[in-house]
Length: 238
Image 1 (cartoon, rainbow, N blue to C red):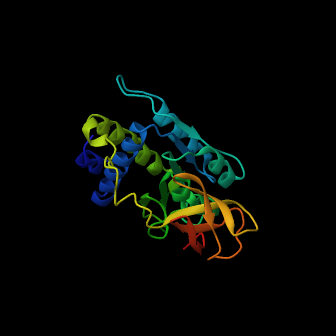
Image 2: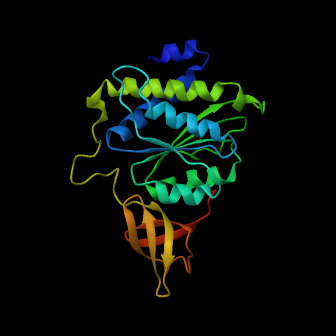
Image 3: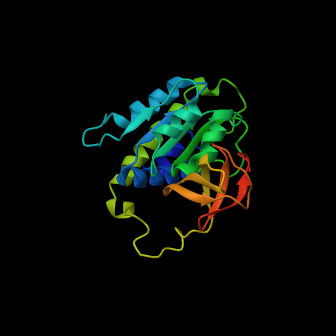
């Protein structure tokens, strides 16, 4: 599937380009063994539809991709215990949905690639790794098929990327990689002790981090980690 074909389906050139970039990222993550976790707090059928779309090889020769829909209350905790480094979290929600905002914010600490699909007022820049958005304020948009079109095209483009396996190889092959260096990583506090240390979850796993620079921390706090030390405490919307 090509970008012009996506435009023919009624998508803008900008959105078609976003779809292509997102599909390339998803293909790389799936090629590396990722599982996709889909959520849609207000519109659960979309979460279920996404999981079915990716896990069910409806076209001969296409591979089934691991995808699971997460539904029900306490979504932040549910995603937290499900996702592993390298996985994908896809959310279908409005920009002000609090659970989705929190999950997208914590994605880097969990080592997850995040994708946010929605309509109306956009989330803040950088709210997710990829944002696929319909700029339509009509509250009926989630029921009109626009979202379905987005993730159907995304599924097709992801499989197009699989036709070029040379592009899906890991990007960091050297022993030292500037991109992956410890320049400051988002971490989520798992547990804190009284001696200025905390167990902090980052994309690399759970690490022991010195917290004396930021003061007392509690489970769920977000911190910026550098060289084994928490440099600052971050608000979820920072």
